[in-house]
Length: 94
Length: 96
Image (cartoon, rainbow over all chains, first blue to last red; front, side, top):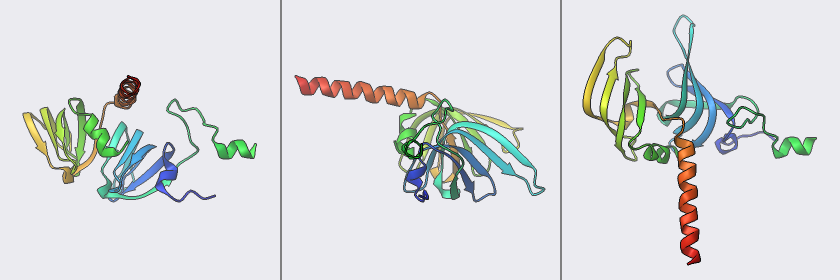
């Protein structure tokens, strides 16, 4: 089944698009009604007008929700050490 | 654990925050509120191009100007530990 709610993406890697053409990727740990996000192992990718990408490692951040445009899942769930988690869905499939 | 309660738990710890103007601010957080307004001490402000630095003893940052706040990596583990201690205390009190 498609994951449609932000709460379905908790503890999963996500990509967040911001209104100034940059994006932040990392593991979503928490969010609130303002769409403030707590992101672990965050990486910021900012683009200049010439299309040059610049990546910065930020680590654990609280991202202010004001500029969040959209979020999208960016891969399977992993725990904090980067190991793949066998969640309920995949164990049923096996 | 909501984003603002994580920030609340970071009181007294060193933070790095980036403003919408791309200026970055480093300092120790004294207090924060529900608007994400922060007061910091021992502050170093860095301009957007990273060339100018300003030092301040104390600073108030309005929450609306913030893009993101970097918090120490070990803060999460610390919170988990503190919660476990509190739970243990409560259990002991309930047992008495």
